[in-house]
Image 1: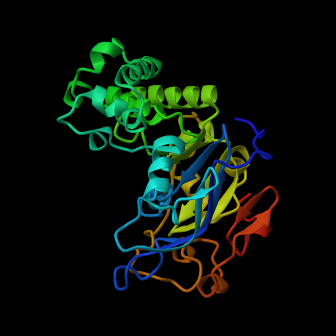
Image 2: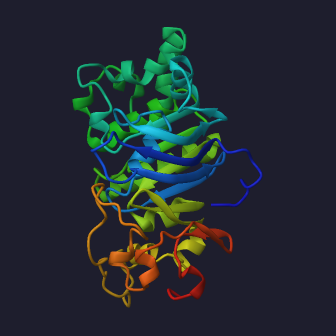
Length: 329
């Protein structure tokens, strides 16, 4: 991890993105003024509980929005706003500039088609001759650790384990040499050993190619290990962001501290995990103040009435009325 990306133009800029479902489907926005950036060669984590809005935010990068959704703000990939792009522009973003690795590899591939068709699809759509596309696919499969890549191209998805198939999905994502990879919890469905292998492949290839990586996860230990910066989401909002080391050593938001306290540790003298009390805010609820106030041990009456703004503290940002008090240190 490094901080050498600060003066480089981001490959991803999400700028005050708000996303609402059609009237009657949700009481609050699924995303509420979300802003984040990813620079070339940088790994950025997006963490939070299920339902916090992580997957909606990362799918917006490829223009994959819920049916009937209304948006304000911008989502720029290599300078192009995907929310206003026409069909041709959106196709170019998906083919050449950004690629996505989903949580379940079996949901990403057509079970009736051969793996070679899947890996070369984007290349062939871009006009690459069949022989050249096949050679490129072999090279990519070898790069992600698939043995006998030529033979693998002729096999079908059911002939691969989950871990091997996720390697195939990563190879397909890299086929167009994208500037940005969005990985939406890509190791959740895999065993621990395979998870480590997949993470090693992603980070190695990203470092070799200078690709920006937006890594979505609920695993804070993993985020701490591989990310340069981390954004923490709760109820559709970014509640804290800063460099990974500082975030985990000195969280400013009680929700971040709660996520850390419920993470199991293997140190002999480590305290037992402590769950965050209460439940996440559902989309049918729209509390007037801080969405985390009902679960927060440090909440004041003001917290239930006034939503805190995302404010600068040191090198990061936090949305908490008490962030400057050091109550979590």
